[in-house]
Image 1: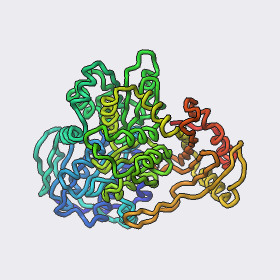
Image 2: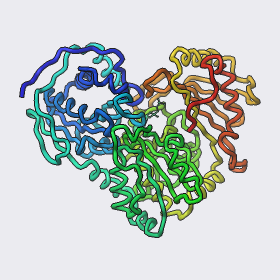
Image 3: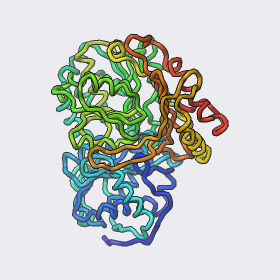
Length: 543
Ligand code: G6P
Ligand code: ZN
């Protein structure tokens, strides 16, 4: 085996976004592209000599090839051990757990999350640090700096590792340990939840449908829901990970999990439906005839978490990303626990979790998680719901109605405008920001603006400040709109418009979100002069 140093780089545009580096797969396949990013990551963390890493991905096209490249580079850079999921598979939360359990120095996850996969679709890579969470901004900034000045990477000429073969392998001096991707994760779930109660629920005829969307959670969901908890065979659908996710977007929302939504709204719907995304960190929850928004899900989980063994003693606090609705704040207030508002991106929860300030975290983008790992965790959220359903013995719809009667309802919807020319999107944002001083007190579509600002986050743990994290407009009467540009898109800009309207416990909580949000939506369209900036006012996706 020969070590070699290959002259290459730098490549433009290797700046990690909300969740690692995402590009078209063919870009990652350009000779040296992935290599230079990986070497830059290694350089940014002081090298990997003597270190151990967890490596795995969501099984999308190029997953296995990328893993072989990374293993050889890790060996050439002197790493001591790589822990790899069998077949190259590991869900994002499973990687987070393995980093913590095996006390490795970090991990690399190959995924573009919920983006479609295939040679003409998306690929991605993210680096997680030793606490199991996504690299914080200080680290991603160093990684980006390294990508700008890299001129060479190190690799070793060695045969590929048989990723399907469990056990110990060797590349040069580095050990490669291929492990069952599910076992450690499933064991962790068993320590958090009352598997006996959930088992009894299924034994009593409770019916569930879990859509793995042809992505990584298939094997996890089958092993846990069907094998361990006794859910009937066929509960988990689209359970075999495929390179292109069956040609769809592995994004668990009403648009991309349409078949599941249709089943759940039909007269023969099972009691409970759920889905997860490409890399297994997102979740969608839907009851019979009743979709649960991610913001409501976080609030319901916060209010009921004590019904599961892991959270019996209560929660330290709840954190949510700024565009997520304020529903969980109301629960935190009532429980007398901490609540925090962070920028979009799971990495911002890491410090709060490490410092013990919060136990649950959630985002409107279908992410929910707790201090059991340092990533959001799709199956975890599903299991916490199941534990709560097993205890409360009520339907999802009844639990929501009870929740709104107690706390009021935060009507909520996110509207996405995709593939907007970057300049047009920037102009719209600039146009809005330029009005901030004059907006308060003005009327738009019957709503009066209370305040408008650009969100800055002051991390209460490390004192760091993150500016320009989204523009927000709040209105008298409990309406709010947030606008930001996605940090995970790969084509042009994606404009996200987040709409919220609070209705108190005694108000009518049975409206459709669309009706309840009509005024705030119209106000945003007017204030931003949306039609003239981007040429349309109808979104591509509503969640
Ligand atoms: C990923 C991140 C989340 C984030 C989401 C949406 O899933 O892990 O933390 O909320 O992307 O990000 P975006 O910048 O596209 O709105
Ligand atoms: Zn994901």
